[in-house]
Structure formats: structure tokens, C-alpha cells
Length: 171
Ligand code: PNS
Image (tube, rainbow, N blue to C red; front, side, top):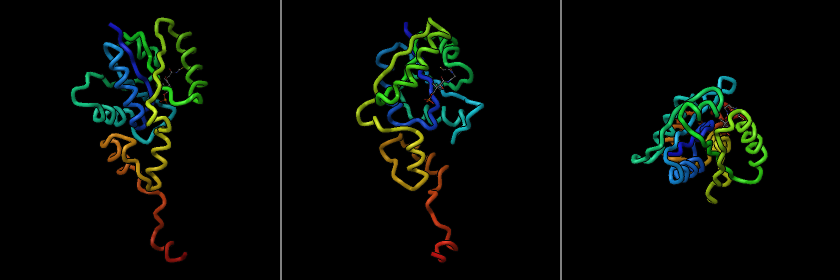
């Protein structure tokens, strides 16, 4: 039985991540999505909120587990009996940092192997930061993120381009 973990920030999860999760679930016997709780970097959503959004975005019949973790990804993998870390690759530009991480993880824990899955063509340009930026400026993010994430983003990010009435008058 091969267990894989898919660690990431998921701030928030988008359709590119979901594509990687569903393909990982086809390949491995068990998949655990690991949402990083990073004390050094605060996200738009807390780790618990991000994990909830991942759970709400998975199909109801999904057997994929979701957990949040702090510390090393390899320790998270070992704690779940995983021998594989899955990472998604969008473009060659991702390769540099992903290669570095994979080699560091191998040095930290040689029993855990990194497996890269390419993101589906339709999702190649997606990133959580870009989606947050578009949403914050009032652009449409429909079709880029699952509905629960779209609702959460809309609620958290009021369009930054709205000009207050008293300034609007002065234009
Ligand atoms: O979604 P991201 O931000 O690209 O994911 C990066 C992540 C969470 C996979 C990476 O930062 C990570 O594994 N952090 C946990 C700490 C760790 O293991 N650091 C050493 C990795 S080489």
C-alpha cells in the first residue's frame, strides 16, 4: 500500500490543486493533503480555514484525507506512513524551486520520494496569489476555484478598487 502526502500552503486551494489531488488519488492507495501551518508566514486564511476549504472542495465520495501540519513536510509524510510527497508542476519556471525542495527533502529523509504531477493544461496559469489579487480587485474568479472557495474569497476580500463616495466627488 503506497501512501502519498500532498503538502502545500493552499491559501486557498484552486482548481489546479484539485486536478493534482484527483490524479494522485488515481495513482496512490491513499492520499493525505497537508495544509502547512506556517508560524512565519500568515496567509489570508488560517490553516484550519484552509483545511476546511480543501475538505469542502473535494467530491463527497473522495477518500482523500486532509490535515494541517507544522514542521517539516518529510516529518508529516513519515507520521502518515507515506513514502511519497506529491507536488504539482505548472511550468518549467516551477522546476527550479521544486527541484531544490525535492533534493533537500531527500537529504532530510531518503525513504520519502518526491513525485511531480503536471497540472492540467487549463490550469497552467493558476496560482493562489494571482487569484487573490484578481478577486481583491473585483475581477471574476469563477471557474478558477471551487464554489466554497469563491464564496470565502468574496467574503474576505472586498474589492480594493472601490472608491469611497467622498473621494469620488473630488475626482
Ligand atoms: O504551496 P507551497 O507554498 O508551494 O508549498 C510549499 C511547502 C508547504 C510544500 C513547503 O514550504 C514545505 O514543505 N514546508 C514545510 C517545511 C519544510 O519541510 N521545509 C523544507 C522543504 S525543502
